[in-house]
Image 1 (cartoon, helix red, strand yellow):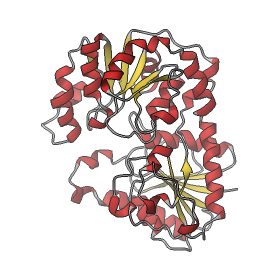
Image 2 (spheres, one colour; image 1 turned 120 degrees about the horizontal axis):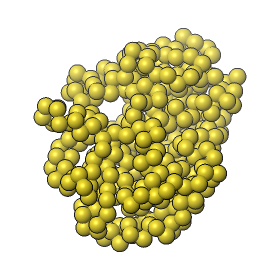
Image 3 (tube, helix red, strand yellow; image 1 turned 120 degrees about the vertical axis):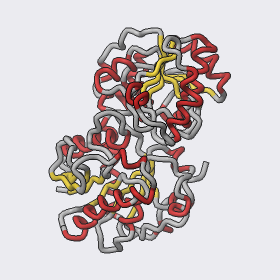
Image 4 (cartoon, rainbow, N blue to C red; image 1 turned 180 degrees about the vertical axis):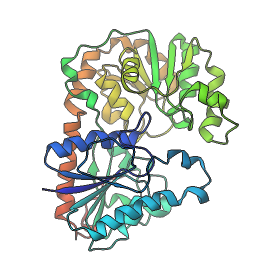
Length: 387
């Protein structure tokens, strides 16, 4: 039986109580791996509730709030967590592979363990133009490999990192299971933007179009560390860049009638909000790497309308499951035409491509590649072409 140490990191429990993209991906993947006979040691925080064969913890609860502190006060948190992971890798002989999800620190620490340690698959969930000093000269010693969450994401990686890539695995959602056997929900007249309110997601563009085109818009997601309007209103003045973006660019357009912000929405309430929406909007201002909210929208039978950036062209079939545009002006023209998209096509696409089982099988293939080539030279790996 294969044993995988799944490193979720110290920031949020698995599954997370609300927002938490990486932790949700892990919560989706682990049960499917265990169904296939993989033994999972989950490196996480003490409040995690996901069933696993064993837990490794350095902290009793998630340390996400500490990310708002100055770097010199918070930089040791991820390293303290990685100490527990390293201790397990060094002292135990039953760990066949480490599947790491901790940005930058996981990749650098695990690669420094040397050739005798367990092989590593490090999943890249973020923008690969970050950390150029690390990624631009990375050397995994033939033991540490990476995967992306879209081909577009990997196309932006520096050559040194891309040389370690084994391919991309699209994200999945449990909502996709049996989606093609569910009828679509009755649609309301509103559109929704789901996700953290931050410049890259383009909520200011969506809000402006709501007023200009004339549609009801619901913004759902946290602003910095604040998950509700009440929390944000009660907070002291914050230097958080997402709070500044909200205050300067988005809040002036939120009138409570045409455009509303409902804070973080999770569970059944989130699913109902998305399922009844006429469409989900993605007016992206960055190249979205993975698109969790995109696959969740399809699994809930709601078409996607967005800019053709990042992973969206890999996930959406234009004219069938959504509408992809090149400019804000095209986006404004497309929004009223989303009624032409059949929600049942979205459900069928999700059931075929974005179930947890599909993602798990893809990762098992990568695990097999990692296990079979721990001594391969970096030069022998197949590099993905740049876009």
